[in-house]
Amino acid sequence: MEKTNIFSKLSQKKVEVIVFFNYYVQHMSNYFISQLLVCMLMLLALLRILISNRKQEDSLIIFAPAAFFMSLVLVPAFGLTLPILLLIAESTLILIVNIPSLNRYSQKLYIDSFSPAYITFTGVLSILFILLTVFIFLNRPVPEPHTVNNPAIPNINRTVYRMRGTHSAGFEEGDRLFFIPDAVFYTVEITDGNNSKPVVILLPDVYTTFSGNEATVSVLTKKQNTVVCGDFFCKDGNYTNKTLFNRHARSLFLQYLNYKADPVITNSQNYWKNLKKSELKALLSFVQQHYADRKLIVVADGLSGAAAKEYLDETKNPAALVELDNSIPGYIPGFGNYAVIEPLLYTKRTVEKTNGWIQAEQIALKVEQLK
Image (tube, rainbow, N blue to C red; front, side, top):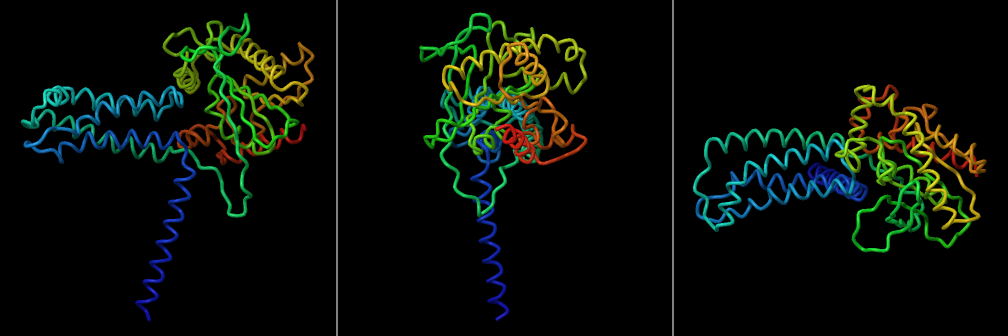
């Protein structure tokens, strides 16, 4: 009888673990899964020193360049964040250390021997890999809260418009398949045939892009809003004069300057404010073309809030405005869904820690009050 109870408890525990694992996997973001994939490729490249032997081709070495190229692909997909930067650095070192092995494999040679220097470097890289993996797990995105009683969420449609143009000349959708866009516009809405939903223009600050605000976008969309947002890369829309940081790397670079309280941040305020006015103008024009006669609400983060207020007043635009600032408990103005995307780093930078998804709900509530 006692043995039966033990097996029953173990079985129940097993079911609980499976249910939790299934839930967590379903709610892991593509961002986190992609990081885990790169880690897996790097692990296989590092383990070759234990698995490979001298009587076979060193086929595991192909995971070294695979990890490197996969880490680079994460940048255009998710922007350059600190975890992705660390993955690129680690995979680059692994690739460099294994260049002689790649050359040997390309000539279809068997493994000769692992030199003491190679063993030492691989050992160091393995330790760095373990530390990096722990950091990625601790800093993984917070999954969206879930309850069993939640009704099924309708299909959400995201449309991406790759635009050409400048702030001075205006933007239009590019007609070629392959080109580097000057801006990317996003529309996110529930596909239920309702064409009267309010349109929410989300205007991020200079420290984030659309991908850094997706928790807010998700909550706003589920509350029956059409969300429009844009990332700008045009010639007259650069946040910094450093060419290296004009696109995907610029947010991380500016976040670093903000963290260091660099004078560049203070000196650039007026310039950035004018850029944000131009971005809002472009998004308002886009909305007028695609969603005319809809109620319009602008949600602007940090410095973008002041820019949006000035622009709407100057143009006498009737759109309602929600400024994201310290009135939302624990929110870091300008940093979007930082508490969701970088939870470990968020706790190091905020005085009042709160759940990032609760912050997104509070933003959505402010929008609901203006409908």
